[in-house]
Length: 260
Ligand code: ADP
Image (cartoon, rainbow, N blue to C red; front, side, top):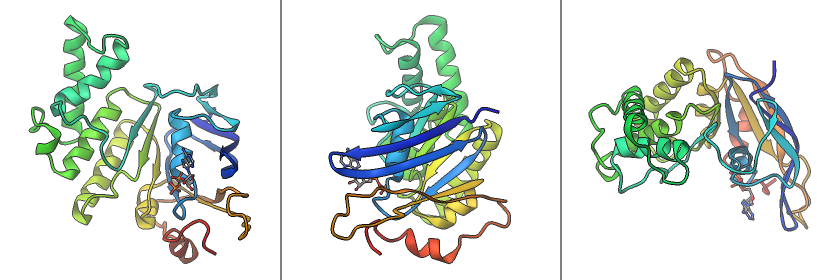
């Protein structure tokens, strides 16, 4: 079976700084991949190049076996830690807006029957994330957890092949985080999603993921920290019930990539 997402000998460099080197991985459809590693190890970069916000310096990324264009598309949804919803639009309009843009790239607005369908799809998705009572609310009227529910609805309404989550629950209180864990697990199961999620929280990584990837620098030059990039140094497929993070990884994810 073709992987949903494949990274083939991917390198990312900014000027003389090598951020990622020799990243090779295939991610199967339906996987929930947690991405961990010390700060600065290129985890967000790993996600950003799948989103198409930027192209790798070398190598290629395939989506369903086809080379990815270096531009965001409806086949990839994304949720960031903060600020991914539009403050001047109601919850409903925030979700409809994504469909407006996908269905009518120039006018960014659908009309007639198509718009009716878009509103219906938005309302169904808002209900699926638990915002059925808040469709007319504006983001400022929603709690942090509700705003993230909205961001998830906005990303999922276009039925992306891959959902990219960059520290989606990092700014939330512990209790709200647990609710969000239950929600994302349910959405992953019912919508048969393929998810890549960056997190600083190693317990979250092991609790939610079916596979955990850790990024780190296998080689380091103390005199020239830009010389070597990070790559996947740990790749484990998990049985969700028995998974526990190894202590050496637990210590490392709280550090900076260039600390030894
Ligand atoms: P992580 O998510 O693991 O903390 P990032 O992917 O955000 O790491 O960043 C990895 C490294 O790449 C950092 O040193 C960061 O400063 C650098 N970096 C990221 N984006 C750019 C950019 N557009 N230009 C230059 N350097 C960048």
